[in-house]
Amino acid sequence: MKPSHYNYHSNFALVFVILLAFSWATAAVAQTHDQFLRCLSLYSNDSSSFSKLVYTRNNRSYSSILESSIQNLRFDTKATPKPLAIVTPLHASHIQATILCSKRHGLQIRTRSGGHDFEGLSYVSQVPFVLIDLVNLRSIDVDVGNRVAWVQSGATLGELYYRINEKTRTLAFPAGIFSTIGVGGLLSGGGYGVFFRKYGLAADNVIDAHVIDTNGRILNRKSMGEDLFWAIRGGGGGSFGIVLDWKLNLIPVPPTVTVFSVTKTLEQNSTQLIHQWQNIAHRLPKDVFLTVVISKPNETIQATFSGMFLGRVDDLISLMETRFPELGLVKQDCIETSWIQGLFPNKTLESLLNRTAADKTWFKTKSDYVKELIPESVFAEIWPRYFNEDEGRYGSIVLVPYGGEMEEIPESQTPFPRRAGNMYKIIYTIGREEEENLDFQRYLSWIRRFYEDMTPYVSKSPREAYVNYRDLDLGINNRSGITSYAEASIWGLKYFKNNFRRLVRVKTLVDPQNFFKHEQSIPSLSSW
Ligand SMILES: Cc1cc2nc3c(=O)[nH]c(=O)nc-3n(C[C@H](O)[C@H](O)[C@H](O)COP(=O)(O)OP(=O)(O)OC[C@H]3O[C@@H](n4cnc5c(N)ncnc54)[C@H](O)[C@@H]3O)c2cc1C
Ligand SMILES: *[C@@H]1O[C@H](CO)[C@@H](O)[C@H](O)[C@H]1NC(C)=O
Ligand SMILES: *[C@@H]1O[C@H](CO)[C@@H](O)[C@H](O)[C@H]1NC(C)=O
Ligand SMILES: *[C@@H]1O[C@H](CO)[C@@H](O)[C@H](O)[C@H]1NC(C)=O
Ligand SMILES: *[C@@H]1O[C@H](CO)[C@@H](O)[C@H](O)[C@H]1NC(C)=O
Ligand SMILES: *[C@@H]1O[C@H](CO)[C@@H](O)[C@H](O)[C@H]1NC(C)=O
Ligand SMILES: *[C@@H]1O[C@H](CO)[C@@H](O)[C@H](O)[C@H]1NC(C)=O
Ligand SMILES: *[C@@H]1O[C@H](CO)[C@@H](O)[C@H](O)[C@H]1NC(C)=O
Image (cartoon, rainbow, N blue to C red; front, side, top):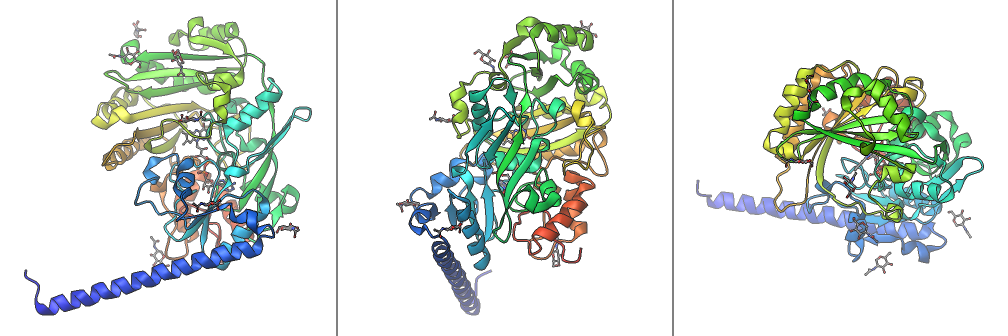
C-alpha cells in the first residue's frame, strides 16, 4: 500500500517524538553518569589516584579492560549492553564509594572477579550500570603453620594454587579445575574440583570473610553474623554484597599424587563402561576422583576416563583392578606428579599466573544431577543421536562423581544442598569458536532439546542445577515488577532446594531495598 500524505505526516511526527524521547533518555543517562563521577570524587579523599581507577566509555582502555576477563564470547558482541563506567578498586574504600554513589544516582552495579559467569551476569545488565572489576584486589597470604590463607576475591584459582605451592608441596585448596576462574565467583556458588570427594566444596572450607554490604559497611564473620556468613558460601554471587576477601582452610595433600587418563571408543565398549562407571565412581574411596568426558572429535564418539588419586601409582592400579577391572587401567595411563602439576598437566606453573584464558568460545552449559542408575539404552541411543547431529561435533558431556565426604555433610550446612544421595552430576556444554555471522541459535536448540530428552532420567521435583553453572533458561526475575517468592522459587528451588527459603530470609534482612540484583539474584521480599 502506498503511503498517503496523511500517513507521511503522522510517521514524521512519530519519528520526531521517538528522536526526542531518545535524546532525553540519552541526556538523562549522560547526566546521571556525570553526577556519578562527581560523587565518586567527593567520596574519595585520595581523589586524584581514585580517578585513575575509573574507565569511562570514551577512554581508549575501556574496551580492553571490559573484554579482558569475558569468558563467554556470546556476551562480547556489539549488541551486548556495556557499563557506563568500569571501576577497578585498589582499596575497600573505593568499593564503598562506588556503592554509595551508584545508589544515590540510581545506577545498578555488577561485580566481577574472574568473569567466568556462564550468562555474563557479572558484566552485563539491561539497565544503566557500573562495573566494579576486582582485578586489582588479588593479594594472597598463605600461612603454612596454621594451614590457612587469606585471599582477595579478584585472585584467580591459578594464582591461589601457585602461591600455596610456592610455600609448601603438602597443602592445597579444594577448588575448581580451570586456572582463570575468579575466587570471588567460585566461592560464592560453592566450587568443586578433584578434591571435593575427600574435603567437600571450596565454600565448605571458608572460615571467615569480609563483605561490603549495601550500606557500604565492611563486615567480618563476627559482625555479619552466621546467617549472612552462611549465605555468602554458596548462595550465588551478586545477591548479598561484595565479598572483599576470604579466609580459607587449606587441606593436606601427599607430595606425590597420581593422575591418569584412558580413552575408549564405541568399538572399545565405551557405552558399557559409562554404564558401569555410574555404579562405581561414587563408591570409590575418597582418595580417587574418576570423571568421564564424552565427545565426538572426529568420526567416533569417545569417552575419556580420567582423574587423580591421592597416592602412588601401584596402589591406584591394584585398587582399580578390584573395583573397575573392565576399564583396564595400566601404569602407562598414569603419571606420578605433584597435585598442582597434576591439575594442569601440560602447563608450566608460571602460566597459572596468566589471567587470560586461552580458547575462548561462544558457549552454553546446563547441568543435571543423577540419583538413580540411567539405563544403558540412554547412552547407547539418545546420546549418540545428539552427538551424530551436525552440532554434536561441538558438544561435550562431563560426568562428575559425587559420594565420599559429600555424603556426610548435611544439606543445610551451606546453601549448596546436593550432598547424600547424589551419584553424579552431568554437565552438558556446546561451544563454538569465534566466527563471522555465527548463528548460535541452532547450538542453543541442540542443548535444550538434549536436556529435554534427559528429563525422565535425572533429578525431579525439583530438577536440580548448580548455581555456578548459571542457566537463565531456568527462569529469571521480573524486570518490571517485584518478583514474588513463587516466581523466584521456580529457579531458586532448583539451585538451592529448601535452602532457598533461608536465602530469601537473609537477603530480605541484609538488603531489603534489593540493591544487589541481577536476573537470578535472591529476591528481597518486603512482605516476607
Ligand atoms: C571454563 C570454565 C570452567 C569452570 N570450571 C569449574 C570447576 O571446575 N568447578 C566449579 O565449581 N566451577 C567451575 N566453573 C564455574 C565457575 O565456578 C563459575 O562460573 C564462577 O561463578 C566463576 O567465578 P568468577 O569470579 O570467575 O566469575 P564472575 O563472572 O566474576 O562472577 C560470577 C558471579 O559472582 C558474582 N561475584 C563475583 N565476584 C563477587 C564478589 N567478590 N562478591 C560477590 N559476588 C561476586 C558476579 O557478580 C556474578 O554474579 C567453570 C567455569 C568456566 C567458564
Ligand atoms: C583512561 O582512564 C585511565 C584510568 O582512569 C586513565 O589513567 C587514562 O589516562 C585514561 N586514558 C585516556 C586516553 O583517556
Ligand atoms: C579516607 O577514606 C577512608 C574510607 O572512606 C577512611 O577510612 C580514611 O580514614 C580516610 N582517610 C583520611 C586521611 O581521611
Ligand atoms: C566388549 O564387551 C564384550 C561383551 O562384554 C566383550 O566380549 C568384548 O571383548 C569387549 N571388547 C573390548 C574391546 O573390550
Ligand atoms: C579420533 O580422535 C582420537 C583422539 O582425538 C584418535 O585417537 C582417533 O584415532 C581418531 N579417529 C579417527 C578415525 O580419526
Ligand atoms: C599433554 O601432552 C602430551 C604430549 O604432548 C599429550 O600426549 C597429552 O594428551 C597432553 N595432555 C593433555 C591433558 O592435554
Ligand atoms: C596468556 O595467555 C594467553 C592465552 O593463552 C596468551 O595469548 C598470552 O600470550 C599469555 N600471556 C603471557 C604473558 O604469557
Ligand atoms: C511482572 O510484574 C508485573 C507487575 O507486577 C506483572 O504484571 C507481570 O505479570 C509480571 N511478569 C511476570 C513474567 O511474572
